[in-house]
Length: 243
Image 1 (cartoon, helix red, strand yellow):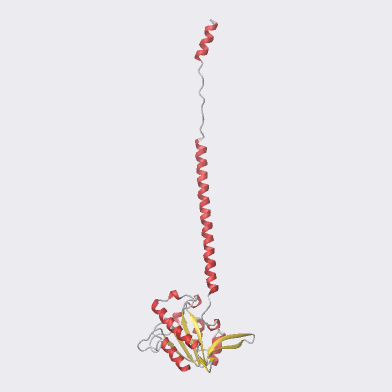
Image 2 (cartoon, rainbow, N blue to C red; image 1 turned 180 degrees about the vertical axis):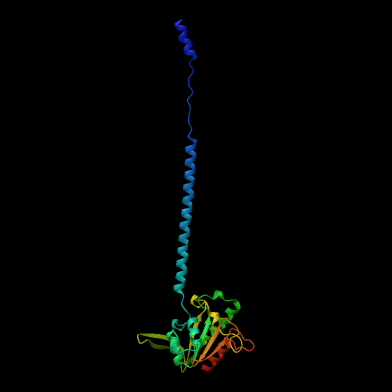
């Protein structure tokens, strides 16, 4: 009997199945963490690239600014504020620009030409062509010679008896320039007198003639009824008077 019971126990004994536990939750969390890390990394790289590109562009723009050289002597550039001081009719001593102040005290004729020099993209094609014509006449003026000597000359003065100050004069007159593309001259059109017996329009190239610090006359970009001749005509007359 004992032997039979032993066999029966062996027959009834079945092997236990091994159970495998899959950690699906941990795996999903790990994948999400990797994805989040990749997204953050990509965002950081993109941000660094944007900052890098910004500094490159900014450096290029600043380099262009430093590389810009004005067509005329730096001390012959004045601002809208200086023109307003001339128009005010007050004593020349109130004018802050050293060269302009000296010229008004020492020359019968002083001319102030409004142009866009640093950035001509602000001009329409028509106005740009008017400006090119006028600057061509100015070039002729600056190249004038009498008795084989250039009329264009340096004027050396003492700035408040401290430092030597130099600007350019043309014979018995002086030319100054307002660059309307300079941010400091953003209000340039407000100072130009247009209409009857003045400029044809509040636009460049505009010319202000100052005679003996008192009489002011404005010339505009084109001819108009009841207005003064255009700037090109006026400068051509000045050119012919010096030949």
